[in-house]
Image (tube, rainbow, N blue to C red; front, top):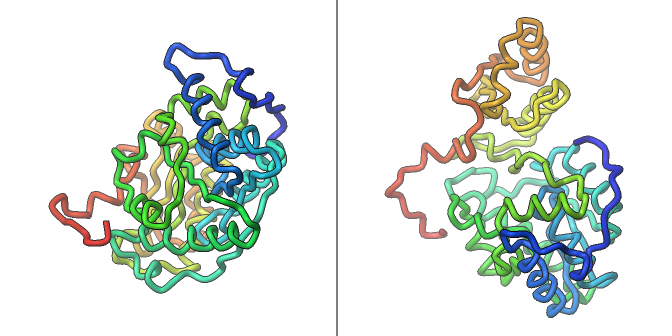
Length: 295
């Protein structure tokens, strides 16, 4: 969704309908959790979860809520624009924190890369909160996240980051349903992970690689695809789209156009992943019995 124009409903607890799934009850619990903090800075990527959390924080804390986005080579410009538009629509103050350099530990791209990346990014958010006298930093992890491979979660726990969506027991489906109820344009937004997740573990991350991935994915977006990844394997781009969108690739004109644009982004070859997009597909290379001491 490239533009945001839908109005946002008032987010007070009394305005929430209690759904059969209990999402409304959990939302009231969420407001209570956030209100108890007194003030909060929300780590804001513009995704479904963090957008909903910003909305709730603004409802619970008013002007004592702040959204902050880390601006780095790992965040596409399109996502940055969406976050800025969402913050304006919600009515929450939005802080941009520039992180133009990739930390050497993160650039090395170990299997627990997210642990180190989260330590760095949330460290910056904690400093920003402290400078402004804000009591807590919040992230958008939900009740479904612990079931997935999320090495960054330990970093958040170590730093004392609050995860109110998880604490309230809100699942991804419930967050989408409530976001739709509040008319948040993010309610049906496709899942997104940082651009570094397109590069195989152990292969060095560089701004050049991230830039060509961003350009290639922008071509897919403009072609009308909504759930996709461009995985980088040396000179080859491996394209993943959602299973339901795969049939669109059986079009010679589209194939020619995408091939040209992806190669002009910097890749030599463009290949199509037959099974389509699968969350965490890059994690397959990690051995199941491997226990990383940092996790």
